[in-house]
Image 1 (cartoon, rainbow, N blue to C red):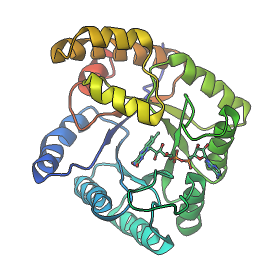
Image 2: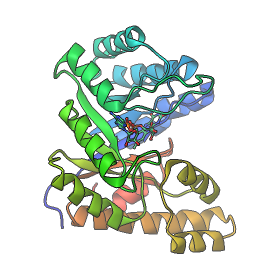
Image 3: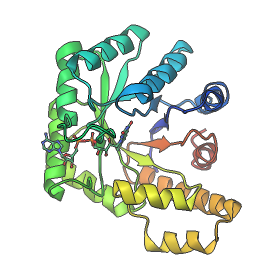
Image 4: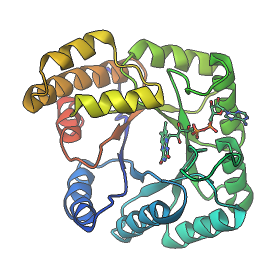
Length: 279
Ligand code: FAD
C-alpha cells in the first residue's frame, strides 16, 4: 500500500454555454473542491473564443482562492499574445500551468505548431521559476511520435526545459504506464509522472476520443461495455468498478498521483475517490 497521500488533481473543460458555466462554478467545482485536490486544471482550445473561455473559468475559480492550472499552447498565437496571457494569469495569482503543443486549430492551415518544450522554455525565460509547469506524457505513445524512444526523449526535453512534472494521457493498460515509467527513468527523468485517469460514463464517446488520441480500450473492456447495449446505469457501475481497481493498482505500485479527467462531472470521480479511501 502507498504510505503517503498521493497527489490528486481534477481537470475541467471550459463550458460553451452560460448554463454550463454556472453549473461548473456553482456546483461541480465546489463539490470536487471538498475532496481537497492538490489543484484543478482547465483545458484550452488555442485561438479566439475557446481561449477566452479558459481565462474566464480560471479567473472565476482563482477568485475563490482555489488553485487552478490553465492549460496553454501557442496554437496560432504569437509570442506577444501568449506573453500577455501569461502576465494576466500571473496578475490573477495563478501559480501553475499545463504547457502543451496542442493540435492544429481548425482553419490554421499548415502553420508550424510550437512544441511543448519550446513553450516551457518561453515561460521560464519570461517568468523564471514562478510557475509550476506540468507537461503531457503518453504511456501508449503520442500518435504522431516517430518512435517509442523519440517520444520518451522529447518528454525528457520538456523536463530539461524546466517542467516540474508530467500528467499522462489516459490509458487502461496499466502495463503500458509502468513500462513507460521504467523507460523514462532509464532516460534520466526523475520528476513525477502522474497518471491521467478517465472515468467511464459513455462508451461511444470514450471509443471516439480514444481513437483520436491513441489510447487503447482493451478488448475485454470493449466487449463488456458493448454487452450493456447503451444501458447507462450498467456502464456507470462497471466503469466505477474497473477504474477504482485500476487506480488502486496504480497507487499500490508506485504511481505518485492521479489526475482525473472529470468531464465536468462530480460523479463518478467522487465515487472512485471515496472507494480508494482517499477521503
Ligand atoms: P509535444 O510534447 O510538443 O509533442 C508533440 C509530438 O511531437 C509528439 O509526437 C512528440 O514525440 C513530438 N515532439 C515533441 N517535441 C518535439 C520537438 N522539439 N521536435 C520534434 N518533435 C517533437 N489538447 C488541447 O487542445 N487542449 C488541452 O487543454 C489539452 N490538455 C491536455 C492535457 C494532458 C495532460 C494531455 C496528456 C493532453 C492534452 N491535450 C490537450 C492534447 C495535446 O494537446 C495533444 O496530445 C497534442 O497533439 C500534443 O501536445 P503535447 O504538448 O504533448 O506535444
